[in-house]
Image (cartoon, rainbow, N blue to C red; front, side):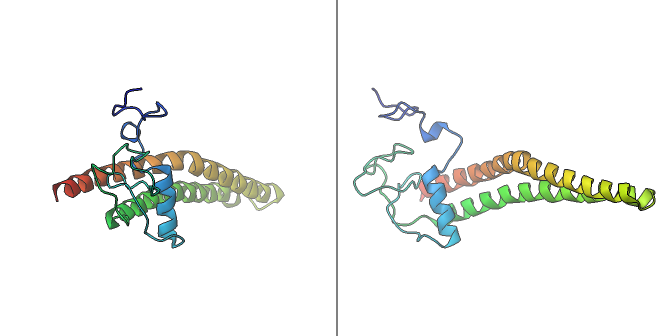
Length: 172
């Protein structure tokens, strides 16, 4: 099999340069651990995409960069950590906004029977029923729509910052 920029040499899968995700899954998990304080920012990383590399590997499995072309680094750059933190922040903000917005609307709607009709067993039952309905609705919307919007927003932010970071890194 001929190696080119669109396929992995061994697997024939699309390379990282052709997928939407800039950071590999392994790097993303490591970045989460570093930011949580449960892993050190030390190791052997690809000098191009910062994917963690074992000592015996000379070609990055994520971006196919050879260590002879770009030397490995012993720690992740601060900018990469900040990009990942910002992405996680954007993802969380979208989810929380949809969840709390849905709950707020739910409380307002649930209070309507108590405001406009006398307090009886059916208005109290309606209040709690509407609260439960809007709680479930907002949780499901936050977990589906919020996740999708947050992921897209976070990815767009990382892509813009990554392009600037790579341009500055390659210039200097």
